[in-house]
Length: 462
Image (cartoon, rainbow, N blue to C red; front, side, top):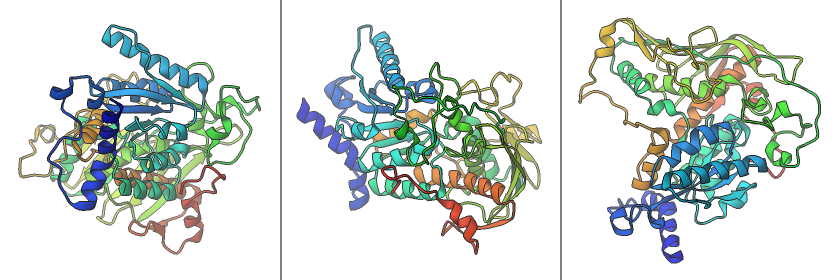
């Protein structure tokens, strides 16, 4: 059995890489068919490990995987040992209930590097804080593990470029957690725009929330169950306080989301979703803006949390489209063309209780200047995106069938880069000129210095 498992593992991790390198198209399945080895045979499953067992991991990413019979969550990892054990518990409980017999097959890690040495693991979920995404993803790709990673792709544009290069070279299947790409109304809205249903696209309005000030700055002892040094990762050493990290009791919204040391706030937190969806409609998913500037931006002061609050930023693209991003607009994306407009949002759907649409049952998923636009049929000879009905399933299918994912790494990097460009514009408060090909600002050393951050030794993203 062990010999058989190693063979399956070797094929899963190297089939795509081999195909790229040789140009050979494989005609046999990447996993032994269930008809040969049985529906739940170990050699027929994709073994998945969950790195980061907080609120997104346990409520969204783990359930996203365990709903598929051909995937098996076999390991968990968190720098908070209590969260790791809790992750193990909920997975064991799910499989025990599903199969009607006790299950205790989940291995626990507190160091992702040790987990990546496990040859039985085919793929990983990365549901960790934003500032650790690039570090873990690069290591996972080098270890030959397929990757589903929560957005945004990176803390900095330089880190994002590293991830895209490393993942592309490795040949592993990568999916960024921009699940709007697997949501019908976002795909349809983008197809309507791309197929000219609103005329020539002129302006895109992106509505995002801001974050309030606050946070307890009182220094606290580091909990014994938390490896705080590894949690800080590449970012500077600062004292521990619970509002800087995550709740020690429960799984409420963590404080790191509102600290610039660990991210950029809502411009990447929600912007990575909406700007990515905007790029779809604009046909700019593999590029970025050429001019960016800030009309206004307020940053919290006095408390622990220091990310942006209210803001309004602008970007011009080489195709002539003007994007405006602000908390002033309704949460979602409005595409405005020469003959009409289309608006799209999640409606009242929510991933977490803090999502902007939470509880708003009147929120529209899609709207248009003319109802006839929304009944338009996209013809067979018109532009179509690949249909993905469920985001985690699309990733698992890509692994199983050696196909492309709906949200690949380069497009994930470009969406995140655009968000970070808006953030840099907020900081510098002047017009910036960006070259999407070279990923450098034009004649602006100060802005270019903000494309990366100093990294602590031992946690560098190389």
